Amino acid sequence: MVFGICLCGGLNHVPKMPAPSSHSLRIHSLTWRKEGVRQQLELGRFLRSRYEAFLSPEYRREEVYVRSTDFDRTLESAQANLAGLFPEAGPGRPEAAWRPIPVHTVPVTEDKLLRFPTRSCPRYHELLREATEAPEYQTALEGWTDFLAHLENCTGLSLVGEPLRRAWKVLDTLMCQRAHGLPLPSWASPDVLQTLAQISALDIGAHVGPPRAAEKAQLTGGILLDAILANFSRVQRLGLPLKMVMYSAGALGLYDGRTPPYAACLGFEFRRSLGDLNEDDDEDAGNVTVSLFYRNDSTGRPLSLSLPGCPAPCPLGRFRQLTAPARPPAHGVPCHGTHEPATPTATVVPLLAGAVAMLAALCVGLGLLAWRPGCLRAWGDPV
Image (cartoon, rainbow, N blue to C red):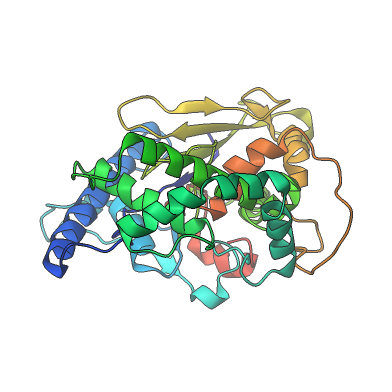
């Protein structure tokens, strides 16, 4: 393997619903934080075992670069994962042997890679409005009015007539409690959880799915995908000794119609055929391939994924061709408002709207890439 990327879920967070008391909230917050750290440690150890022969035994700054959004939870996610990936950064090490690993960040207002411009993008809001004003969306919403009114009484939150993301936050809180073995409220029956999951799926689908799923992807996760491919090409062209970049960011993840669990991980692995020294036509000749895996359960093996029309491992040239509709055009992210008619959608877009555009809907923890810190400033935006 010559290059790898993993996009992984971050630490659990403190629920948004009212807690019985501030003391209870503090206790539960410590419980969730401890469990989230354990999950990230375990994920880091999984990455170490998977790439034992690929990574150096200890951290080397010329091989690893870590990038996080500027939030406490994502910074902690990166640090906890690194403690599992590199033993010298792990807990319990003697003081003389312990080594902290740097995690880089930029202010939220300057982050153009891991913070997608959905809030400040007029075109994205046009696309979202088109989806939420569709008859099927409105019909489903009307059918849940009584349910949301009942949920308001149970949670103390305003839900009727509000964005469905508020209902998703209720589900997210309940998932967090259940993941840590904490009792659910008496009103949180299986039927309630199932309905919340349906509401969440509708809301997420509006953000990343049809209509115009490809264009939505261009404005969200397609930005990161485009950077991943561009950076791989740079690494190969410059012959850098780079093996890993770790991305830690809120609002990234993987979507297949179900909310992913905490510390889920989507991996991209780049490989070149041995014995082929001609790098000029590697992509066109199929000598470089891309494989994807999805790890959503720490007790089982990761799932192998493939793009429609390109069984794994997919030749890189073909991968670029298939993902082109979901990546921003060469002139940049098309955020200006427009009323252009819808264009045909490629068959790969539904997967890309899930595995890439949903990088903007949940939690990415860490990405795995090849980098050298000294080259980062010279390379520009994709980092």
